[in-house]
Length: 253
Image (cartoon, rainbow, N blue to C red; front, top):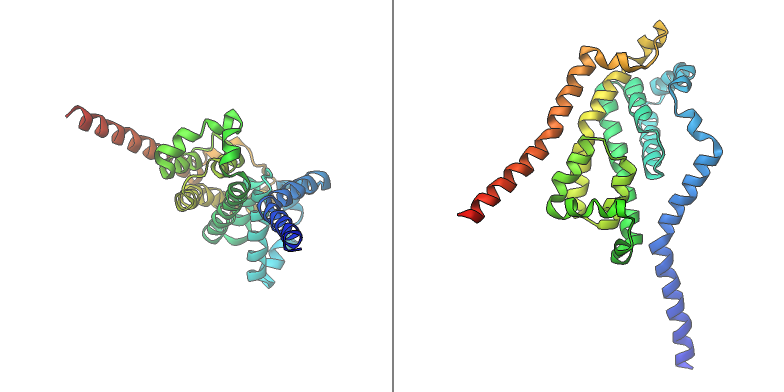
């Protein structure tokens, strides 16, 4: 009798454990499928922003805190689902809230979404998935192991690798959570303020009938911060080389 009562309890605990481990990942996958099939991505565009700008400005003016909260939650949702909308949302943050508040809100929303992906993948993956990971993810492993903070910071500052892949790889490989979170928030901060500054001028561009094109990035107020960002992105690489050279000299001595 005792054995019969123990077995269902063990099975229930096992089912609960599986649900807690894989449930959040399944929710993200379901949300991604819904977002792609619903056409919601069509609303993440400059055309849509221009068409609804007066309504959005009015809502922000009447309900500033609610608008800021809604913006943050939308940004977190988009990044958590790995949807392609970070640039337009950062521009929208500057457009609605100005370069400083909009940039800070964009950085917080984008970074929080990246942390959500990291946590969900870390929970679902464990060590077993890492051994069977895709070669593209395994390519990140050496960098994460050597100096996770600088490696992640460099990947955030130099957006050559898609952010969703960095989030996924970090969750699978599992660098220290504190280093991942700190590097993500710091790495997204400069570009968030740069594009929020650009977004704060969208009203004038819309009034003049201008389009967002490559020529806009040649303007000094955008080109100079981007140049500064490029220089800033080199610093982690130089620091890594300096540490490697110092270690080599120590070994020789």
